[in-house]
Length: 197
Image (cartoon, rainbow, N blue to C red):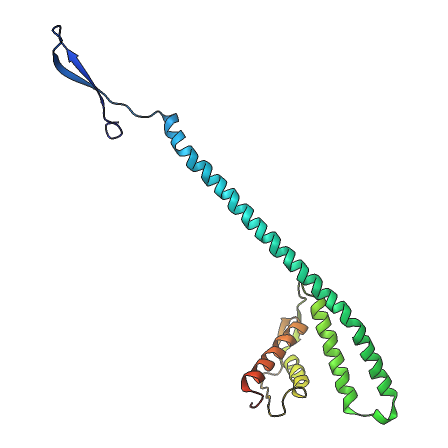
């Protein structure tokens, strides 16, 4: 109490009215008053906490809405790509029946391009869903992607694959894995300026 407030000084007087001694009354705030001092701080903290939670919830809601828009846009793009792909497939079947184009490499390459477009369409339509993982042979997946790319990149670029052992299996989503390998190869070709190994 002595540390909190200066004491109240009470002079003691004799019959003549002269002060002969002093008494001191020490005091401090009550428990209720002490609690009331902290109440505004607690109240402001609770309000700030609610404000932070509301801000986080709003940002999360806004981000989720943007993600839903992008997922919807990707699925719509995949849906719209279906029509020209079907048309291309019909043209390939028509070319197969043309005897002047029989045994031509161009039809085979067109079929590969159509398969690639179908895979890209599948990627877009699967955006926002959990990828399905299957055990796949990694070297054969890489080989298939690279053999497709070799005919579609600069002839001045040489791509070599070496995998030991040749039967390496892992749980992957093949279309997404192929996409990764394709992007790595394309980035490598771009960084080399279209010439190199």
